[in-house]
Image (cartoon, rainbow, N blue to C red; front, side):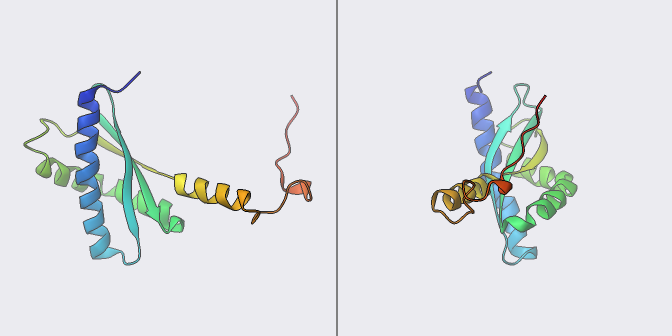
Length: 131
């Protein structure tokens, strides 16, 4: 089902303010970490918002997602304060790691010949299971 204009507007507001909140926290507590909100999806009933976080360096992604999930009530409260004139009710927040940058890097490495060639070394390929 396609998102309505209202869902898109709410997702945009949440994405912008959430990025500001997380980046401010990253500046204060975590040196050398960049957090960006790559996408926010809001459910049709406007009760939940799924936020996809892109973290650099990617090795710290899981650790940061766990920390953000643990602090969800405080983040939700801060967002509610920022959006109180735009939203009646703040949706519940769910956080997910966005790994598209890793995927793009793997594609670049494969296309650039930096990976091992599967034709020359077939052991690196996943073995398919026969049913």
